[in-house]
Figure (cartoon, rainbow, N blue to C red):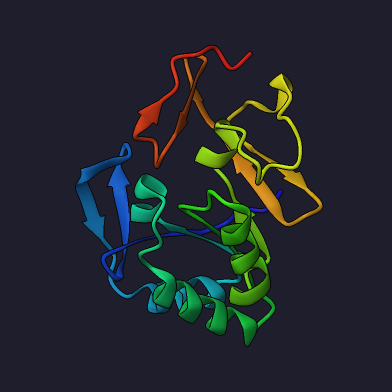
Length: 161
């Protein structure tokens, strides 16, 4: 099992939202400094999320992600990134140009858009990630059989099973 330290990005800094609430945010400072601490602590992967992009679908934190990928590339650390990846072009940009090793699809996977190369089987609809060989991760937060997406802002009331 791999534990991935996370860096949630918002307005240029590392933050943590309380229960996904954008109005209840705790700041943790410079994302690159936090990534460096994770790498120095032995992390093999770093999970990075552009929170505003997760909510809106528009990239906000590319500069911070690029810096984290640059730092990770100088060590044996891989970066997986998510937030706002809702098209094939956005996925390809991160995997091919930005240098991330894996992308994380939330909203796109739940809405089963064109970017998802498979239909998610019911047994994969759990609170853990399902990995496929294309560098894709689909985490789904499922609470009381309701799949959450859009940065855990929208809740689909349909039974995912």
